[in-house]
Length: 311
Image (cartoon, rainbow, N blue to C red; front, side, top):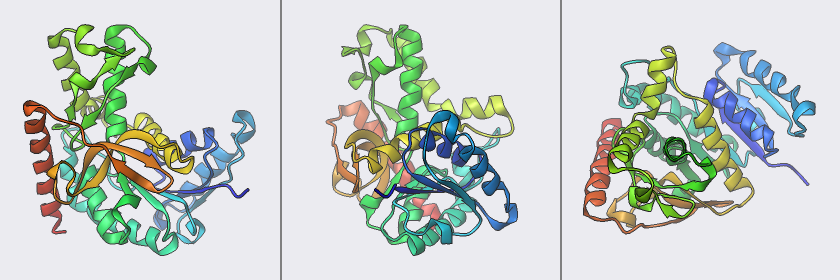
């Protein structure tokens, strides 16, 4: 049986680590793409990863390229291309530069893989998904942003550390934009089925929510010359797996919402059923008054970013 084909555009830290996680799970053949100016770099990383296959036992064929012809017929295409954050920068500071990069990449993906499902990782995420959707001409269900999976993973990790339990036992959901105004639903968060509010004090929960919102910035400040890549790549690989293996996973992703939540036509973080057709369903969570207020603030920020794109 023919293996699925995965294109990853951007062979930097996030892109190359996404290839590592995807290969380690035997998700499919991988094409790692970057710009002609760095010819040799994506090819070298792809070869290096392929040479690890006998050790980890994956049978994926992995290639590098600086053109889109080798990506033709991809089932999933991941966009990680763009500038990463430096200390003192917000995700929004990347808006104009990365929008041009993402649009060009999306058009090339659509040209060579018109049936692909596109996962956008570039920042500022919610606006970049919108730009990719417009540039590609794809149906909205086949364009999705990786944000909530990463944000939720950070939240769950911090909570597990606080509680002293396995990360697998913490379940949570985060709504809204991928940024400082994301909305962790504390009342929907559990550890082993127990509401987290019974296990962690309100003060510590507030601290953990704040740390989650600043999770990316914390890493940027520590690295000083780049931004997070292990966890973003792992989150992206989880989404690839949900799609290619038709897992029907309920994952928080940046999905196109029109009537849902009354958003009116933007990509924002919401719980989705992710499967072989892309975003197969958006789950609407009943929000209390404070959650609704925070969510609407987050959505308004997304609207402002999209307006700044001139899209």
